[in-house]
Length: 402
Image 1 (cartoon, rainbow, N blue to C red):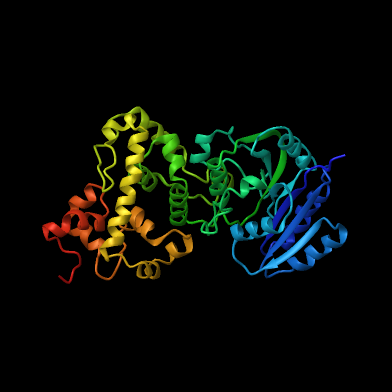
Image 2 (tube, rainbow, N blue to C red):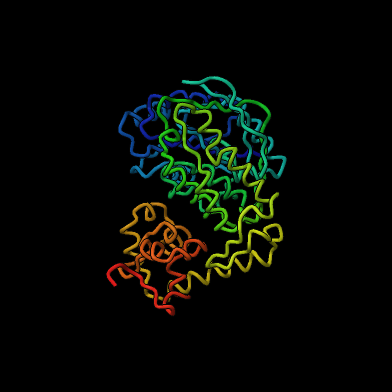
């Protein structure tokens, strides 16, 4: 008889030994038996090693690895690389799963083409009750992180992606990864039973995200999956950026349910997306350096226009590269957040940094250029691209000393 597929349960742990026993006990109680549990110690400062070693003695299906601290995404990726299963299930060290979760998920994965399987969930710890996740839809996933971290996916699909994004240093790495799976064609299904138990603690990573860092993370998600957003919403990047800047939520630490459930833009943000499609005159025409479409003609966005936008974006990259006015090392040294994100320096400057007044080099002062020439900012143009295309011919100044 053919052996059932191996499920690899990946448990990253950073100084959470106090909760680890409960998480691993929920794994040991599974009715589905062909699993391995990969515990990855991400440079913990507590007794994680001792707790994990105890479970290795209990059952040989538990395996333990230690690595230097590098964050949740890198730790999950490390555990997956060490694993051997056909199906993967991440499980945080402070959460739990029901004894039937593996059994029901594997049955679905074995008999369907579903790419991601998750379930209903509830809270325990500082809060109790069901986690009221909305029904799954692809559009909703683009606006809201509606799938928690402990969902099953296939190794072959994971291998089509770049894995969990280690640039998401402040959080939301799960959301970014689910969108990566959506990009490679995975469908999602939620089991209509509660099989996941999410621990609500007084202090947690998601609660500690500042509004500024949250806005930064959401921008990263949008850039990482730009084609998806264009596919489902037809939103050019300048339009989406303006909405993000205006409607990024202020996190409310006193309400962990809201923070977790709505870890993407709030209801008002989603309403304004809808308004974008309903009102032709939502904005005045905004033609950027990329020659994006007029918002007055927004509903007419089609494939040829999308391709033109992408072509013009590449043109913007090209003109900056050839100018000699962009110094990659200078930009990264002045903006450590860009270095940490893993995004290329020139792409960040082109899409965000220029509009924020960040200097691309010692020779060009973006903030000065935007202040000196308000027409550039009003037209939504990147200051350096504007200068290279028009400003240099008009004799416009590029820094205060001149």
